[in-house]
Length: 536
Image (cartoon, rainbow, N blue to C red; front, side, top):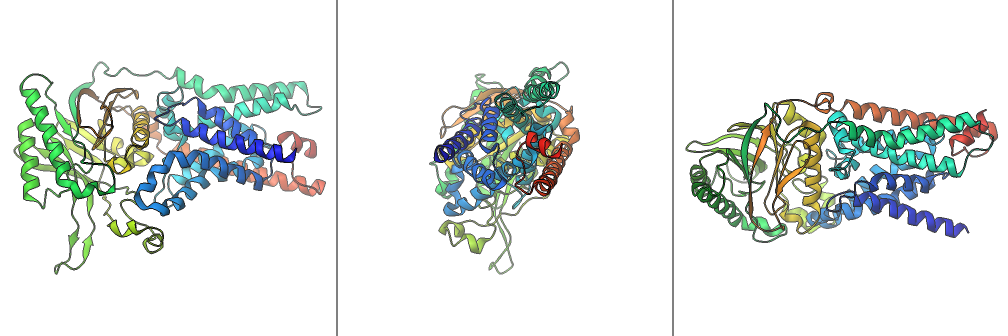
């Protein structure tokens, strides 16, 4: 019987983790998230802290491994260390559930604990890796509009609150505390129902804005997807072909515009790494970019890798390469640039290089990039363009910095070719959709190999390219907005409040448990009802 119970919990933990994974694109089953949370809480219900940690690790592995397996294409075995970190961001909050389950309003504290885990992985280690935030699986769902009130953290909180409320409701109906007054039981049931429905109902009540509102300025933007010769890490060795591809597709667009077959864009956006040849150091690349910019007749934002700076005798690198977005203006040349600030650990730089090299020979192939320090905005023709280069779109503050600096349009120039035919590009698109809602801005994704997309401020994808690793050009009209949402104004405030409440609840639960042990001389109770029975 004991073995059957353990096996059932193991299955429940794995199914819960897979349910959370399925909320992310390309699956997009956003509704599965609260159900998965409820199942996970049922698995740890009544367990001690140590057992909860084990079940939390199992669920987190089922969640994070299929979601993030594409990251292993960079540095192989080092990836398992990164996986361990993101697993802990889920497992540790789950570990503390037995402590807060003893408290009144337990679903609230469970949701706050989850927020503490997401707040931590947003920032540590090495600047954080919050790719698996629950909010990023909610684009297009009823919770997504909450992003305009409290950003991605509020969306994650609401999802967990619903799932925890469902667990609390079912648990109370299945196992009502003996001798509990009917009024208290009714209040607990109502509280659980409120927890389940609060997020979805509030999300449905938040008004969505039309793609173009009266008074909006609009421009026509082109996103160019030139494609790469082939997928994989070695594509960078074919960098001239990548540049030529983007020049060719832009020339085709210019010819179509001249023939009246496509509308003339006001701005053209190329992807990250569309010119891995430094156009400031290579005359041929500079000439080619200038010529096609002159032909299209509007500014072109070029994703360029600026080469390392070396010392006077050319024996040592004094400044690493930089990942830049450069505004190229017709008949003028480069007029503005932004250098990516938030670099990808184990991709654009290697933390613990000596240690990491023990696990992968690929470490030696990575030259550490130099992070930028400037504001993530560009003066790009008619737009004040906010830039979140690839990985930066996962960070709340990076996107918010662009909007608070005056961006009226957002772009996510990205190079996903390294990750091949995986779900990475679709996951990134889901994040971009949530950022559109969060800050009430249109978002243009330009990807080297796909999938490029144009997203309205309400998160709707209005245009996208087709299959991965095919060239394509999107030309669409987008609004330029300068309004700010409540989420933009509040910044990380809601996240810190919810995190502080979660930590305080865990401490309070631990103190109550210790008192219960002293009174009874036995183990601490694991439910609110047991605690009430002990403490009176």
